[in-house]
Length: 206
Image (cartoon, rainbow, N blue to C red; front, side, top):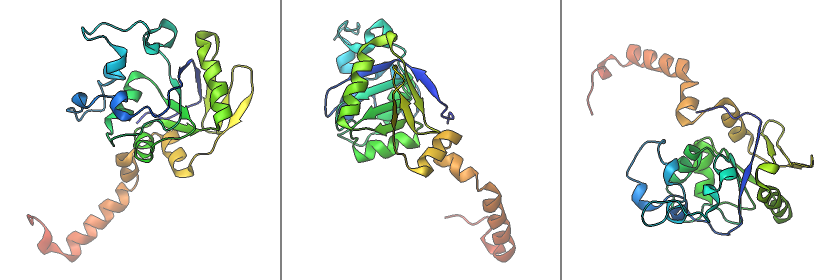
């Protein structure tokens, strides 16, 4: 998983409340088990017309938001079904951080496990960031996970809380497999001891 580093970028504003996972990535795209390739279908049903052409009025199709790495959203982002494909699609598009006042619990957990930083702010802070994002490429927002702060285009800093373990995993680029591999020496030692103490288990089939 990619290590999370301080960066600044253009934020895309999506002020709607209760944006659910089916809107983020419709169910018909859930057949894949790969984390890559879903970015093109992010917000598919509101991003494209029936003939597959882009909807000019959808914000991600506007030139200055096509490469956004930050999304500022309305309340309760990621509600609905528990599909892990939702954070997969968001990160594959290139978004590294979503800012809102609240997130659905399962989406919140899935996001951190897949390298997507979610930041909770107050409604007033969210509204200010939405205004910044609406200025497009004329306003860049900085995300500093190490120091747990958002820096607005005018220099104002917004501090945020994040679970220390989740922060560590993002900064070190560790998913669940990466965390397990950190204990590779201990796992190997246990297996070797088991071979010595329980030799009859070698070659056993379940």
